[in-house]
Image 1 (tube, rainbow, N blue to C red):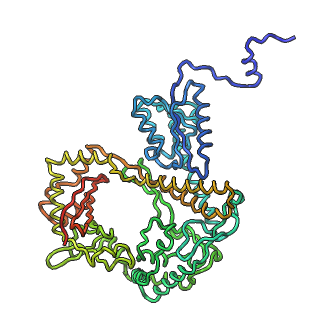
Image 2: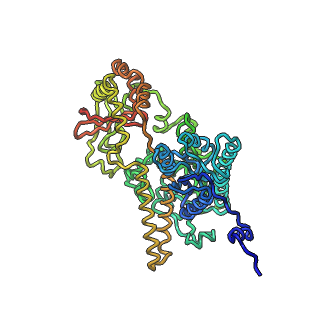
Image 3: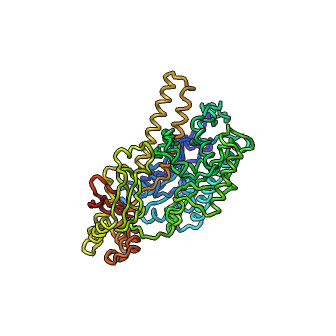
Length: 587
């Protein structure tokens, strides 16, 4: 005999211990979801997006919410401010739209979305537009009047920053140990004189199962002879530039010309003194593995605006951060004795006050003449900066063909010397600037500046070019995987796949830190022009020092075309491009 059950579902839920959420009187309504996945290599974006969205839905759907919009960043570091993330930036822009279709935002995990003090900078923006923030770690929506909520979100930001720093420290410690104990090559471009070869299965079982192979450095004899020649000539007394000139005269291919596939960022236009210097200072030619000579440093984009975030720059590490293998890790090209002798010679030259021309220029050496356009005029034939050349009857800027690398394509059309007279270009520039910043024309100038910010002229942005290259790398990877699926021997594809994967990783890193273009308002541009001071007075007085400072303030650049005897002049005050003008001149 069975008892009568009035509510079967209630009884079953009670027996199974299921907690039923009671319906709410006032539903949240449409809500936007935001999530973030750090990198595709370490996390599957589809899986990460799925579990974060499920967590958010389980959190808010019992309260009557429906996800009406999704914003999910892939490959964006948590340290990047929201304004510089793609999807987070879109979300912030949508706040200003009264017809956005949602009035609240929910996240899947707070530590993935906010880093350090980012929440304290973002929350007021949501509050200003009447948008609620729902965070699972808070168990509800964020209440700005609740000090416990503020404290917890501050703790979450600190935990996120601590987690990132701990991961960085562990990875660096593991890589240091691999170099010290095993002499392992940690990737990147092989030094000139070496190439990478297959070193057998990867020591990491998981990576070995995925087909990864260990890469080792082997000597490339043709380029190794060039390295030996550089060290021998330097020890014999030649300088960096003298060695570079000798290599160019002998038509020795420079590193970017020998390996254009891994030096796409170079011009391949011959040996330079800086190239020779980099080879002379690389200790890996001794056969020992070195790691940590260069390090990534996060530098504030604007020291006066910490909220703008940081950009990654590579800097030389302090000596205590550099590690060396205990035993030789690859064949040597230069003996330890020769390498040490070269370093002692470099130190003695530096101690004696000798500097290269490049270092001297950077140190701001005093000059006899004031060069109004120093570093601001480029030759259209070869793209190089034209150098000041004082003459008895006036100042000129010249571009001599003799300093071009032998075999350079520019030599075919480059005259022996290209000259541009300073007073001709000075008068044309001053007349143009005077009209541009005249009180009667300044409003038109500001209007043109504002309008020019939205027009790219059909030229893709740096971020667009990086995205295109990333798409090409991913397309190649897809073709390689398809070839393996069609029956091609995987061993034959390992090197090509590894190269494509390395390129993809490098492009993602560049894309992550590519600056997002910003626009300026009328008032901001007026303020920037006012900060230049009295432009008319500087032009009328004609003092070289005032003119040089003015040209630097507006970031003036001249592109001289010898065939047409014309110069294209452009200025970029405070990152905004003003109109350009063409003037006639030259000799």
